[in-house]
Image 1 (cartoon, helix red, strand yellow):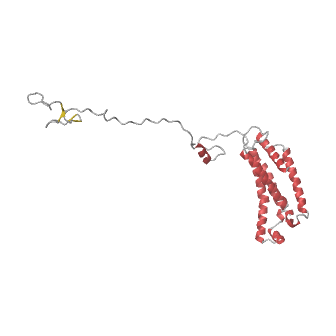
Image 2 (cartoon, helix red, strand yellow; image 1 turned 180 degrees about the vertical axis):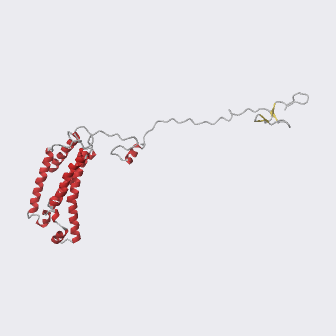
Image 3 (cartoon, one colour; image 1 turned 45 degrees about the horizontal axis):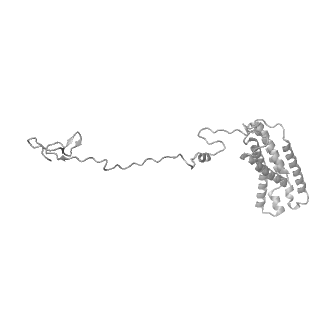
Length: 266
């Protein structure tokens, strides 16, 4: 019964934040009033149970947190003085620190997560408005009975856990259009993504690439086709140049002639 009412109350708060995030709400949704009334009724019932003889063994649960001390716990339950003071400090920390912090984080999640625009909670007036309930919870964490204050801590932890689903994209029925996606500047990771995640997203993925045709393999020249034909030649005579224009002469082509100018076989 209480958990569905808690979900409806958070949905009502989210609906108001999505409709007009820049303006503080002027009315309290009915689901929120119902949740508050149910919490007060449950607290009164628990306080009556703590005052009865049912929990007489743990009578310290019915005393205010500020009136209990480590010495009283050591005297009544036989704990070592150091252990008793440790339990008392943990109790004070849970009721006067953890409870207000969890409430503030829950409200921050409901009012600012994925809203279209700047939330009213970012202004000094908005922070002051949220600071009032936080101060009240700090005082209640010291003045309420120990059992009642610890029960409030547990209930607020459940509410905080339920609210975290809106950080992961949970939608509210009738909450209007979702928040616009913000484009990150060039060279920066998108909002909500770490540079490491962006590097992984930009990394090339394995897959079929463009089909490339194999380059033709060069063929070896035919030694027969590229061979220079053999020409009959004679060796150079003494005194004839062996180089002409940078070319090396291997011999003389043609038949040699005798002194009479008649050719003879080489």
